Amino acid sequence: MRIEQLEEVIVRKYLTSGISRKIDGSTVISPPRFGLLPGLTEADVLQTMQQIPGIASVDETISNINIRGGTHDQNLFTWNGIRMFQTGHFFGQISAFNPSIPQKIAIYKNGTPAIYGESVSGTADITTQTDLQATDIAEVGVNMIAAQAFLRADLWKNAAVTISGRRSLTDFFDSPAYKSYADRVFQNTVVTSIGNSENIRYRTGKDFYFYDTSIQIHQKIGQKHDFVVSGILIENELSIEQTREDASSLIRRESLLNQSSWGTALKWDFAMTDDTRLGAQWTLSHFVLNGLNSSVDSNQSLSQQNEVLSSNLQLRANHVVSDNLNVSGAYEFSETSMENFDSTTLPDFERNDKRVMRSHVVSGQGNWMSASRKWSLRPGLRLNYFERASLFRAEPRLNASYQVNTQLRLEAMGEFKSQTSAQIIDLQQDFLGLEKRRWVMSNNQEIPIQKSMQTSIGLIYEPEDWLFTLEAYYKRVNGIYSG
Image 1 (cartoon, rainbow, N blue to C red):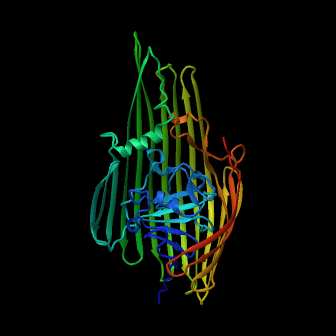
Image 2: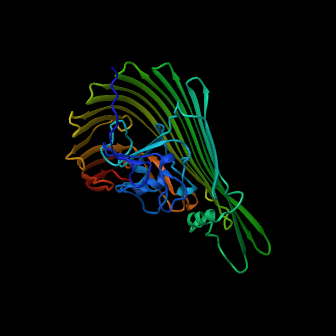
Image 3: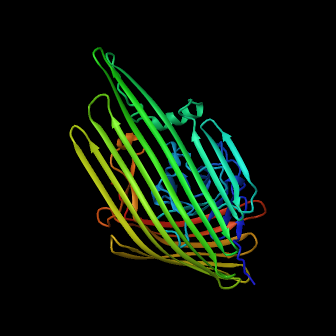
């Protein structure tokens, strides 16, 4: 007899339809099913998650999301297991993930499952596995910023493909929506800080566009094997032409900014028995930020690049022990390189810094629920070894809850976490002053490995169609590097 352990949901309609709160403390967002929140023109998941208590953006952008005080780079964002180092288009104004794709986003603020690492704050796990039972569908949409398309189709028996694409219209016409975004993004930057003089005429023009595309192929072989191949590409391009004209000369300079990400994932799941499942996943993620700053008022130019390449191999197993208990474990090897390059002319100067971190991780997780369904306990342990730092670190995780009655639930959570990378700002003028942050790798010396500890207790009260939550937490992060 096969045992199916179902996830218990506390609230099915949290803030709006398609947003639910799970018994493990996570919040799950399903874009195709959730309604629009006030102020949003489409179901943007990263904008929507900012409405969840404890999550906010101080400048109301996608690229600066804070979870319980943690900075954006201290959060882990994954897409089908691929770690994403870029989450927004238009320098944080729009989510980089197409809202038309059927997907699920699980957000953890505390008590994070042991399978997740490389974060000292929150986790946002985005999955888009293609449903083999779904009907074929094709969608096309256009708004004042971009055009997008989505296709889901069967390939052959037990195989399906999902393809999506989105491209901005910003280089074809300036819509009111684009002008509003542009005024906000480009103020006090190279685009608007061009000089002014009665005897010298200055002109500036900009050309900007973005696009993203993704593909996923799902193949099921027999009743035991599932293979999934996923890929994503995100691109932002900006060019700025400045002209300086006086009575005797005409000078033109072009500045460029390119922000690009791509990732791929290969996933295999094997149902060994009715109660035991094995799996393997390999992911590769690449991010690059290129900038060229040339001024019409001097012959000096500044070229900059920030590049990240991260690969990850994960082997995992899950076993259902009984109706009330299942256990899981995993081994993970990852290698991440981060490179920063700066070059100037007049005077000539060049700097290149590249660092690589390899890590080995063993993790285990238990999920237990009492026969009365009142008690729930999810202990976990993550054991990390960081090669470059020759550092071993054990990180326990815990999620516990007690159902007092049909309307009242108590919960307690705790976790230890660590992170070997960070985003820093060297100069406010870096990368044309638009995307000033760059990724750097810890060396456990002047750039230490960040370590966090968090505990929380909460009360959830749900009378009829109302929901009241009360949470108190304590969070400490050590090793923050400010540059």
